[in-house]
Image 1: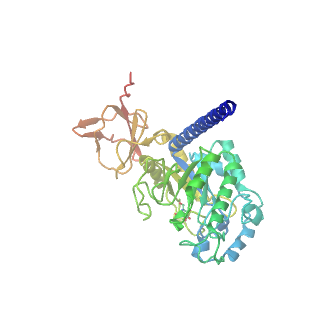
Image 2 (image 1 turned 45 degrees about the vertical axis):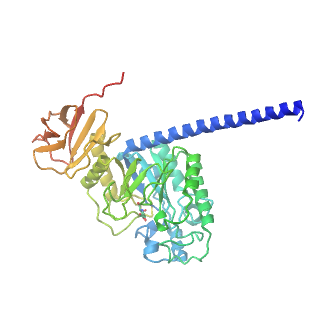
Length: 445
Ligand code: FHN
């Protein structure tokens, strides 16, 4: 090799090394920014504590819940006849966002697509959507996203991975066998379709709080290529949180863990067997027994029950995502609105003990729970008749007062325990709250 060509090749090798170093620096700066944005979003989520779940779709026309297609074994062709009847002219994004805000909710999670595959937005990936298949012709997710951004409430999209309509959802899992679809679709094509739909949701609706997956449990062993989908979501919106209701321990890339119809650690539903991960937590519940609009379900929980569930969720370090199932006209039932308003009234007074807190030092007990923020521990007494309440020892307590009146509360430290004397005049309302103030933590020198 001549001297000149040796110099040239050394130079180009140096340039190449420099370029790849520069690219690595840029990439790592980008990923550090993304990680920080994602962490900030997780912190925000944990502080927010209370969200509105909305199950709304073409099934609302039938008024027999979102599983009507499967439960009544309705084939796709017959089920499609619901779409021409779906004309939700009563839907008002500002009304729904207003209901959520009055209730003290900080975010909304709405079904963009449920198991029936019907898209509630102007997707270009299928005509089985509200704009192309119904007389309504408008995109409610766009209306909702714009309004949510305007009113400062975050919007999450629920997305069902299980799909009873798409012919590429093949082989079938446990459900969707009565839909009458031809056998032999291509699951890879379905995953491309899903990623294309998610790309629309994450690029055309402004800032998205997160994606709430559901339905993977239909065929948990299929190759869902989760990492590809999760990377896509985090690339498009690094601070969009990913959660999946797959009833398993969280997979890499998931930012929060959810529990359905159970507080973390409980398993009355039978499927909440996964251990509690070190991620932000959320539990979802219905006001009656239905997620999607059900005309006959009148089993409404009382507002006190719902407030107590929110408190218990906070004590379990979890958010509470409370569901409404609007009618085919797009209206939230008055029974739901009344309960949500009552929750909002309670939060207006007691929100300090819920928002921005984390589960307190005493784990959830049958008598109640604790939440904590800064130097304060809030003892929420939900079910306790006696005058004295014994807590495990909590070091460094400076004072104890009632939350509402600031009245002094007697305490008696014992070895390994702290006995609180509940003032006899403390009204036995939905929740009796005592505030324990701790000595401020010493600043490191
Ligand atoms: O099958 C769904 C159901 O319809 C609803 O969407 C709930 C909400 O958590 N998730 C599924 C059941 O696990």
